Image 1: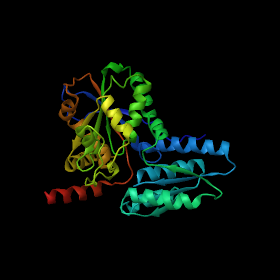
Image 2: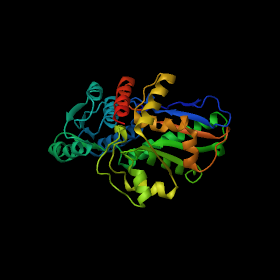
Image 3: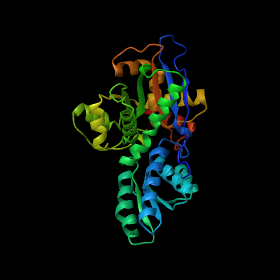
Image 4: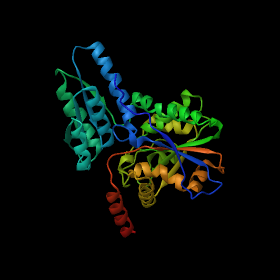
Length: 339
C-alpha cells in the first residue's frame, strides 16, 4: 500500500536570541505532510484501514465522505487520491475558496453547506450518506477528529519523535514536555496514545495550547467536567471546535496535562515572526504552539518548573493549508484596530 503520510523532520531551532538558560526546542514539522497538516496521519490511517475492511468483506468499492472546515477535508481528499478512491467533502460557507480549490484539485467533490462545521457534518450524515445507502459504493465516514482509529494514526508522531531524539543521542530523561495545539482533540489524543505505548505518558507532560474563544479544553479542566462552548470567537479557525471528545478530557485529567490559553493577537504576531525567520506560513492554530518556543516563560509557568539549557522541548508544528502571510497580516491589523 502506498504511504499516506510523511515521516517528518524533527528540527532543532533557536527562538530566544541565544539566551544561555533557554531549553532546546525541537520543531516537528507537520506542515510537510501530503495534506499540509498532521491530519494526513490519522485520517489516512482511518481511510486505509476502513477501505481494507470493506474490500475484504464486501464486493462493493468504498467511497470516502468527510465533513471539514478545511484541513481534514484536504487530508481525506489527498489520501483518497493516493488510494484511487472517490471522495466527497462537505464544508461550511466559512471555508475559504482557496481551500475548497485545493480539495477539488485532489479530485474530490466539494459540497458547501451550512454556516459552520456541525451543520456541514449534519448534512453529510443525514442527507448525503443516507441517500447513498444501497448504492454501488460502501461509505467510509471520516470525522475530522473524533474517531479512535484517527487517534491511533496520529500516535505515529510520537514514535518518530522518540526515534529522532535517540538518533541524536538525546536521553529521553531530557525531554521535559511536548507542546501541541488542541482544537477537537484528535492530535492531543494521538500524542497521549503514543506516549502510553512507550510508557512515557506519566513521565513526559503534554502542554495543550488553545486560543481565547476556542478554549474548550481549558474551560472543561477549570470546570472539572466536559463543557461545550456556545460559539467560536477566535481567529484560529482550525482550533474551532465547540467540544472535545470525552477521551480528551479523561486523558488530560489522568496525565495532568498543562493547559495554556493565548490571545489571538499574540499568536498572529508569532505566525508572522516565524514566517519571516523560516519562510514557512503557518496557521494561527500552528502558531499557537510555536508561540511557547518564543516565550519560554509561559512554558515554564505552565510546567511549574524552570527549564535549563540541556532540557528538551518538542513543539508539534501541526501545519495547515488555509492561510497566507498576507491574510495573517490583514487579520492582525483588523484586531489591533478593534482594540
